[in-house]
Length: 430
Image (cartoon, rainbow, N blue to C red; front, side, top):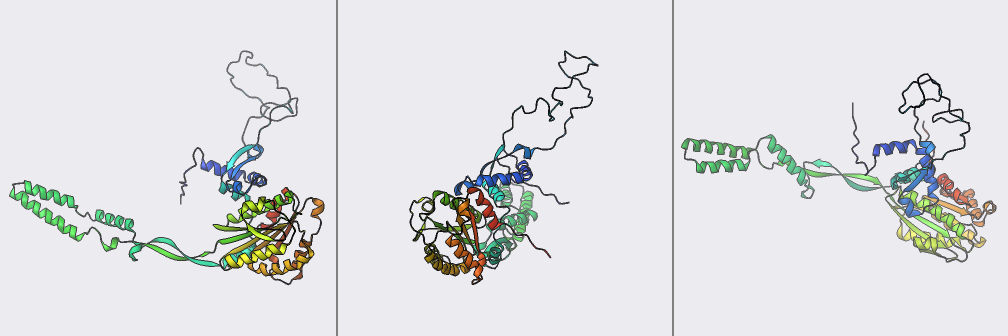
């Protein structure tokens, strides 16, 4: 029977096995608490993990206790009131012990605070994105794109001097010398000193014979033999390309209020963290636009007060130029997230659709989020929404399925919308 021993070091002042059991038992409560916490965090805070609270009722362990009824015999220390045979009155309230009841004691007492503990970054992101994945379209395309690489694969008997594994070679040599009992030079030197100091000819002859025997064995068992030499072995492998870039396009025209910008920021935040958990290196390109578009840094993207008119086509055109200059589609997986209130001039709609048709074949996924002030605006069909929707329904582009469109008007809708965009699809088995 195989025995597997977990020898991972426990964190300081913590029990790793107990923590793992607790996280498994409270999985559903933890997932809900993580999702609630996300709406209050920014990008750096999410990447650092954080503290969450879950109700204590959900983590209680079942236990056995005495019922409030029945006859029990026992000795109670310090009894000065009762003697054997006395009958004790039942407690008021119709119950006893720790059990519940509907007597006069109902409604009294103190409630328990929620249980609060800290999740690491890895744990936080694991529970947050556990039920999400990249769309099937993306994963299929990624599986066909590879690049060559090398990885360590043990040792070999031949190789170039640059790959010589010196430590392993010397270890093999020492093991061979010990196994074959190769004489040490110190032992021969000791015999030579003894031979110089002794006057007994018979003893001198014995020492000379022993020295010759040891030297002969040293020659037969060399200090370093070719069979000891080892070289580091490298194997060629094909790894999926993991480089990705995500474009964030934000409408900052005069019609975008602080509330609308805040909704957009929360969506961008989830998208960014989601991608960073799948790729070692994710580049983000921030593009703000009014009737002109420009590439900016994250601070400017979210907080610059600049405003103006609206032309969505300027952002799409700038994104196309940046892709052409810096992100060849053979090397990068390209994602796009656009947020706007949809208030785009009709004259710019046709130009925006032409640019969209050119960009969709280059990207893996294009998510358009339309933000609204309230439920009334939420039901309104904007010019940009209508243009995008008509494009998808027209069937003029086979890549129109890469465009996903959603609407939100309050913070609580952000996560459900995001989860809907990236939810796992059921696996069909035959």
